[in-house]
Image (cartoon, rainbow, N blue to C red; front, top):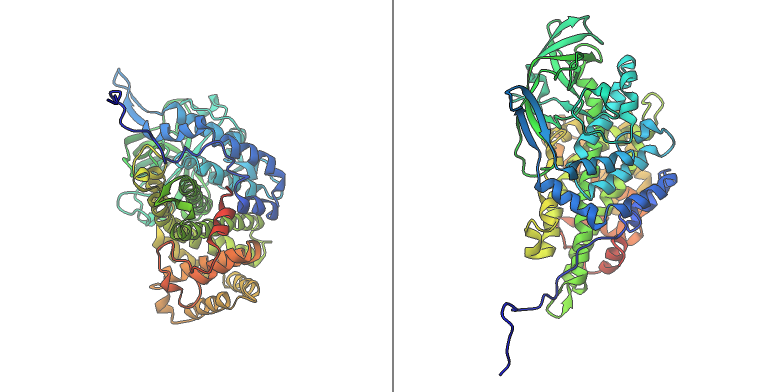
Length: 561
């Protein structure tokens, strides 16, 4: 009689091994080519090193740990004194150290040279495939630099700490620290995206106007990364009803904690490693930056940079989910064949690959435009249009598509994708945030219309360049014609059509960069399923590419076996 050992019921087979120890940069053909093309080849070695370091099992574990052990707020010490201290898992600080080591918080400003913005965006894209929450304070710090540079006296005290490549987690006055992080606080309970309804007041105590010292009384409903060394916030002064912008440090000049009290941390769907909070100002010390009453334009410059990072972060989630899906499909078998060898699954993966490459090429083109238009007075009109018109459209569309994309990639994993022991559930929970933060979809689409109205010369230059790029691609030319016809239609219809307009702008932008820089089979498949007449039959569901395209070749390009 055959005996069976107690406790042994089965052998584990047909499970995909963890995806680790591959190079995020060198395995991404589209990113690598874009880096060379957009003038940042000098950064290739650093990205190869960083791309390998991010996928070691030890580094991958940091993302899971930082999101499982979320930040904790301690408002008082044992003696009852107000401290508003935040405690993070050590993995969080390691992630921030990785970001700063690569200069992703300041590279174009601390090391200005041709391609620096492109290099920084490529590195940010790599890290965003590892973990999203740690990006928030680094993005805000990065975006604050061009705003603070316009305040020479203040910036002189901050420059070295903003540019430093070490992460200093200590909660002490900035004068004692080696590096600084800057946050932002705009929204209030009653307004949300409508910051012009803000009620926080600022009362002058020494001087007034730009560079003056004020005391702030009020609140902020979303105050991201409250542990930052300072925040840029909006408030109204006694002398001007328009909003002004203020630099509000975590510690007051006398070394005491500034009177910014953290009421609670937000319990968020995703982005859980990052602390987002509600705060109240009780005569908090602040310095006005920018002109009085011009706070919204002052801080909008910061928001333009953070919106680009939202596009990059969403494109990175797409890329991370895509490679996980392809890896799983190459190792998992069903009905006698690997999933990756089955025609319908190939269709799904190839469609996802098209979407991912289009998003990657788009943000790299935007990075070049940001660099080329740094001085608006000398920038070419088309470059201004990429930055000012295409960026909010991309923020709307790419971030929206990421929700569907991560859900589809999770489905490739099946039940294994739906549990928290793998990365797919975290990617899915992260996906909505970039559509909401820094301006929701409707805000972005209305901004697109506003930008075209304010800069018609730039818009015309952009469309003329696209028409030239579309030569030889009738479906792309026809789509551009339809967009122009919509924009030339009744003015009263444009606002209601703002989402359609933004969508078409992004799809045309993506198609033009694919036509110029991707293999014909990639560009043709994208245009045929996103822009051609009748492409509505593909709908919004991934995996509806025509069977005539070489799905296997598209997948192999996306993530070589």
